[in-house]
Length: 264
Image 1 (cartoon, rainbow, N blue to C red):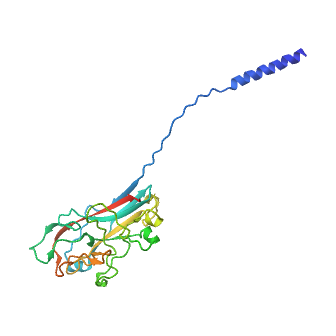
Image 2 (image 1 turned 135 degrees about the vertical axis):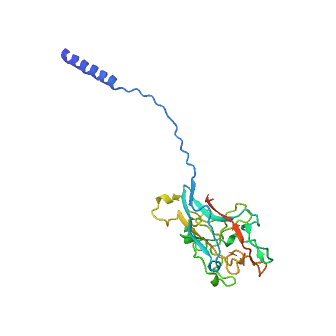
Image 3 (image 1 turned 90 degrees about the horizontal axis):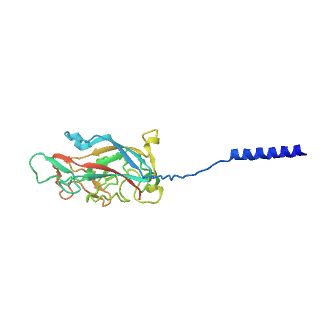
């Protein structure tokens, strides 16, 4: 009996020692983790510093000159976005018109130096997703039109003219103007492009990758018959006020600004 009690005491002591050996000391500290997801809008542009149109042959006046794939635009964004182009100048001739840098020859009463910025035409290689979803919206995906098919106010007039913010107020194109991608408005997938990047694409025909062609067509005489305003269905060419007017020979400059903005 005594032997049994001693054995039980030994087992109890061994259990106590084991429990003490396995006890853990715990001390806890916390660190706060903050994540700041900044919205990112990134537009990459590959283009010459200066795109030149030199008209020194009658056939070029008649057929115009096209600069193919002169500008490449690549978009990456973490937010919904819109992309558009706007024609601008320094306004040294008049707001909304090309800047005249050089004047060739004597002034002529019919030679006009106010050439509208809208005479520049653009063509994008891929149709805007917004216009694919809603055909009433406009972009620059239409083919350049032959001026011989225009007539007085033909439906082809104004299909590719660059958007012009003549007042220089930074106003984006309206719902009736052209966007390269996305569109005016903030509700509905047909009004914006979702966040994404051209880096995920395997081809150059994605909705985040665009090539831009430029065309200028002076016509004979040089009245720029393609410079039309769809909103008013009226010509903006140089003979608007004087039917005998034509573009004054010289060197003119303007610039195209591509704007990528978060859809609001």
